[in-house]
Image 1 (cartoon, one colour):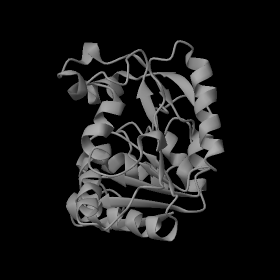
Image 2: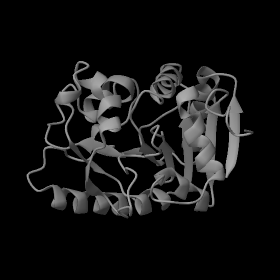
Image 3: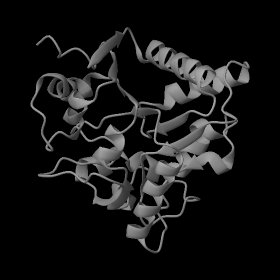
Length: 244
């Protein structure tokens, strides 16, 4: 597990955006796995700035988002599809037909999970998976549990996860859906390269456990210890407990 520590989230985001740009030069048809949440917003804006300057081209790239809330349409302002449109897709030239996000409004969620796995396989798998991390160690919507689902699945969200997403629903936690669809841990781990980004003091203890703690489904991100090509990109605050 490679660990890179940056002075602040701006430098981290710019560095990661530069890495993605280089990956697109090397493989224009890059298959990119994407997260939502507050942490990647600056990274997405950096990608938008680079595209505006002609420094990266997404015309042949394909994206797969990690997750989506269950029970709301993609047009809902609180959906992750709306989040991605605002922060990334409206800023770069990813063709709409190459954007993939689980359909939270699917009438048959189980069938939608199977469809999504099939779409990832048809694309040849994920080349570069970007991850955020929750304060409870979840990645995607793979919540702490006694066992973890391997493939895209339906999940009941923890109260802490719903609380952290309240901002997408006008600050009203009661409006955050109680369930979601999420890539599973095996799907994530099959990505050829993984980069997890974490910023802020609130993530420090969790990051310490991810790096030094046991591999356990009670801390889903701990499974990244087993990936052969994973990097943790942290700001100084998120890295502050690593030497403790």
